[in-house]
Length: 173
Image (cartoon, rainbow, N blue to C red):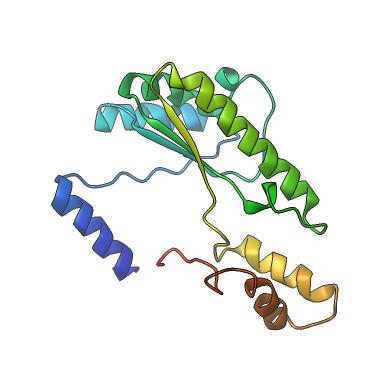
């Protein structure tokens, strides 16, 4: 149980009288994303925001992609799309070039979609949350340890020494 997160939920409920709705779906499965949008609209009366935070991309026109199921609702409510984008799009690293290319592309996508959707009242923004403690980040540390032959803890220390806070974010911080 995450007491800090539970406390934040209690604050939201106390301030708004509404309990947050948490939905998880596989964005590679159009049936799941469409069902998630329908659920939100049915339970909450509309959709105000969409947060994109996926590790892979699918090609095609934006309105034909599964995440676009939410766009008509976002237009009605004049909502916001938040794209989570890694820093490698602006700070390339020779050991992370594919990630850099993907993130630079997502930055470009965010700007283009923002310009397109502004006429419909939908804001589109990109955020970089900095490194977050996940299995993926742990795999980065393991890879960084193998190359010079150091411990995972030493690789973690070196890697995080370039982060202004000196640590990765967690769900509780």
